[in-house]
Length: 213
Image (cartoon, rainbow, N blue to C red; front, side):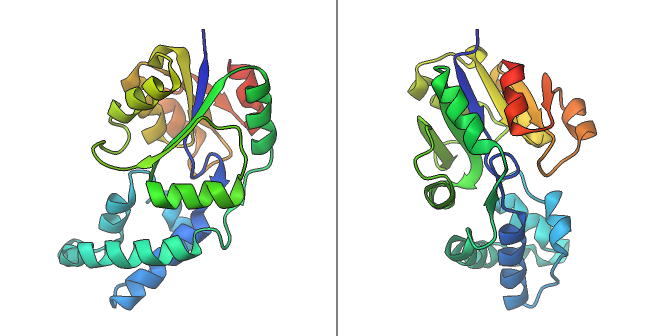
């Protein structure tokens, strides 16, 4: 029996790709490095900020990683809500789940300070019990340790939860934790990727998540 529904953030609750890509391009340009078309970032995000920076740098420029991390983080935190929007139907979904008695949480590989700013700005007052951005001592998704930690905070077992996300990382995260995974087809990745990663359910719109319970 599902008692709690947990969510990814980027590509699941909010469309943040323009602000992520724009901030990374500004940081790359400041270091004299090539930039990328915004749409290319759909495939570059998902494994945390450090991995994004590694992917943005050529193999022979990885010595710039720490500087790029710092510049990207500063730029993104200041501009993370410029063009980021909540997906249509998300507030209604969260309210419907809350009204039905489910506990709700966000677990994202976005650093905690960035996640808090996005949530506080774009989804203020959302009925969430926990918002967990990436922070020590936990590894990034799909390592399941943070999943178990958030489940402890919610007072549920991982097998009593549904995790909703838009990428293979999210589906592997749910599987590694022993939870069910719902692939969000409105997000950054496609149906084939979500199926290949073992999604238990697929939803074309946020409100279709209700049918997965």
